[in-house]
Length: 302
Image 1 (cartoon, rainbow, N blue to C red):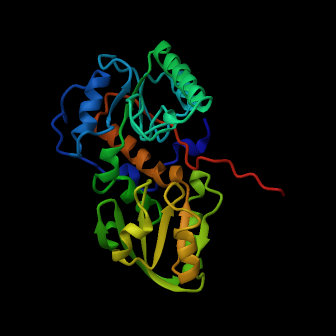
Image 2 (image 1 turned 90 degrees about the horizontal axis):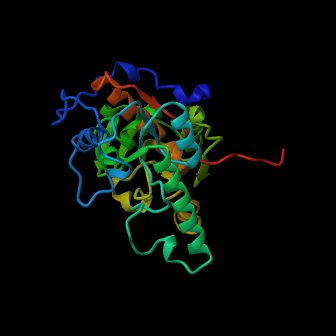
């Protein structure tokens, strides 16, 4: 495994992350136990996708892994490492509700696309079952939990402090920063994300505009337009959220600085911090983080 997969943010190990959890201090032995612990960290709206997606809740834990995305290659790596319970943030089966029947997904498209996706789902499902792997989705809790949830973790990774949050709403924080050119702030963000194999950041708007605050969230719900009332000087958005004919064009026309980063990059630190929390609070179980970071490969003509 690459060295970067085990890099932790400086100072992370010193953070206690102690949460008053119904399951804190109790024996956790099965996949169902660890799922109950995760759900006990913070209340979320129901129904929630935070659950055991596939596998037997009574499975006795050998090792627990964490990863942002349950790619097939990640599942195979987990099994090689001796992991039999894998906690992931995103879906394993190509739609938000995984194996549940829902509408508006790729599975409603005409054949042959629908048949191809269903075949891929069955192949992955059989492999998981044959290898005795349990996959737990932990999405809604890490998105909203304070201090080390996804947006807070990304803020920490970028060097921002909780005490510098000047405005906040739902899954979004605006941080006070030293005043400077938007292009310099964007360069700083790009530099901070090197650990996650993000080759650079996309920038829209006026690079010379002076900014004194940065607003950021993570995931697909953090559309910059939704949080415009928080008035960040520079906005960090996710590639799964913006459209080049809407938010980015608006940024170019108005000059409002907009930085776009990869979805996987934005939530990698949150999964690493969740792994660290579990290590500190359930020390008798071995937790392994499988790092991923930027979800695409940067290929150039040079």
